[in-house]
Image 1 (cartoon, one colour):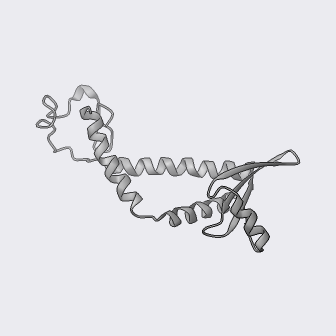
Image 2 (cartoon, helix red, strand yellow; image 1 turned 60 degrees about the vertical axis):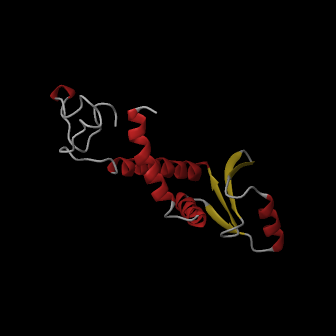
Image 3 (cartoon, rainbow, N blue to C red; image 1 turned 90 degrees about the vertical axis):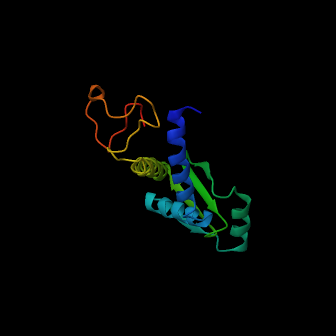
Length: 150
């Protein structure tokens, strides 16, 4: 493994473990369902044995598409937490996808803040020839990436 990859791997692995340890699978599903509702998905509880049996036939915690009268709908089945379906149109699904993309960007930004940021730390013993910042690399401050992309 190269030095660059090794320097990236450990902080990412530690952050992933730390973040994963904070939530249970049920918490993640419930959070996802909150976002589905906020995006405009309708909450449809399975209130009868017939509806519950139908719900149990669908893949759990996955999106399915259904077309009705030429309009595409997205269905998310949750028989384990809420015993319900979430049903949304293309606009609701698009809103949910935008949220997920924004969340991924926020997660990446949080990971970047875990990067060690101390100008006085000496890289020399770790990387011979890299004992200090070279002005030829341009302006750099602790909040920026280093010259090698890390």
